[in-house]
Image (cartoon, rainbow over all chains, first blue to last red; front, top):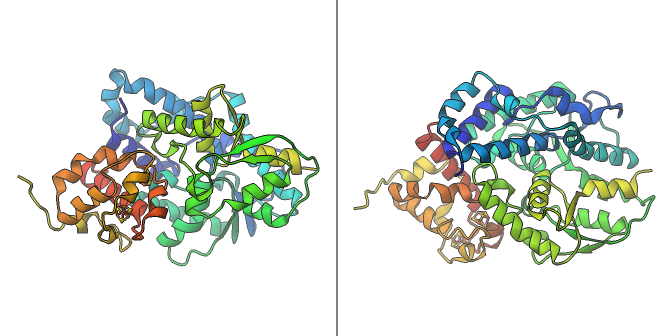
Amino acid sequence: MPLPTGDTIGILADNLRLRRSVLPIPVESAIRWTKGLDLPHGGERVLYTGLMYQLIPYIEELVAAQQKMGESWMAGFTGFGRQINKILNVSAFMAHPSRDKLESFDRVPRNVALLLKRAGIEFGALYEDDLYSGALAYDLGADEELKEHASKVYATLKKHGVKEVVTIDPHTTNMLRSVYPTLLDGYDIKVRNYLEVLAEAEMVPNHRLDGEVGIHDSCVFARYEGVTAQPRQLLEGAGLSLREPEHAGTMTLCCGGPVESLYPQKAAAQAERRVAEIAAVAERGVTMCPLCYVNLQKAAKDRIRFDDISDYLRQAYEA
Amino acid sequence: MTVLQPNLVDEVRADESFNASACMNCGVCTAICPMELEHLPREIFRYVLLGMKEELLQHQETVFSCLLCKMCEVNCPAGVHITENVRSLRHYFDRKVFRI
Ligand code: SF4
Ligand code: SF4
């Protein structure tokens, strides 16, 4: 049984209002990816993570806890849990991902930073001021909380002198590029996704990769942001043979991730359907979104292996 | 007996982008939806336009099961802002039902 919809949304909305993220995580986990990269603080152009990859290990733990709670007596305490959460950050007590897990997700923003350096792009980072975009609040209809949060994000970008952000995942790209301008008067931040930036740089790979890989387009990239050509150009440029599943490009099939927080079983069924489509064309799959990655890999178990696109690109293009 | 609430559409409409009335009930969205949400969008949009509040409230799970994946929207011949409309419906539930 899923947790009650209203209480789940209430907890996420309270967190966004009180703690600047739907799921507050420790600062050291938010900024660990920057270690040793020597990136300037702020500046006109910054690499903006929106915490999406850093949040995944915590979300995975909470989903597991939620599934347990949903079947036990604790489900009855959800409303009570929301009241406690207003005072104490409940998620901080419930989720303690392992160091290995945390590091495996930090790898993606690190990959992207190294690829941008290779492409000759100058950029900084916002460290502890790199805030979650509010994507989940947007999807769940928490409009007032989202608007308040978006103005905090915009004020933070302005404080650091940012004119352009380079994003990593599709949800943060969509929020900062297409949703914020509808919420904030005078919003003037230029937003590009790193796949667009790298495709434009027309880099030549240092190591050619070979083999076949099945591509999974994120719905948000493909149908909200028009990003379908760039990942193909970069992966094919790296030497890989791309295998297109039955639904691909602008007709891609969702991984199920968007309903994970409310209906985990429906999310799993959708992921299963997508994994079957990809497994029918290749033995490996490539994703471009942390939510797609987690949902599909969880459904695939050992059947096929998924990797984030940045792992392939780093292998091929990094010096 | 169905009790109608004529101002329901005004309560649901978060902004001018809510365009459920553009729907011509062709069924493309229903046929293409990967979640097989047969009541969403066209039937539920109709409840809102007609002021059928009880029927709308009965479909809470459907409204929150949508992936917002836009598969239906990019194939809709009438240019209905389906995902934006679904977000408006969720906003309505958040405020009027869950009291967030
Ligand atoms: S595809 Fe568009 S016009 Fe056709 S029923 Fe669905 S929302 Fe209405
Ligand atoms: S957005 Fe996706 S899940 Fe929602 S009704 Fe349309 S096709 Fe179905």
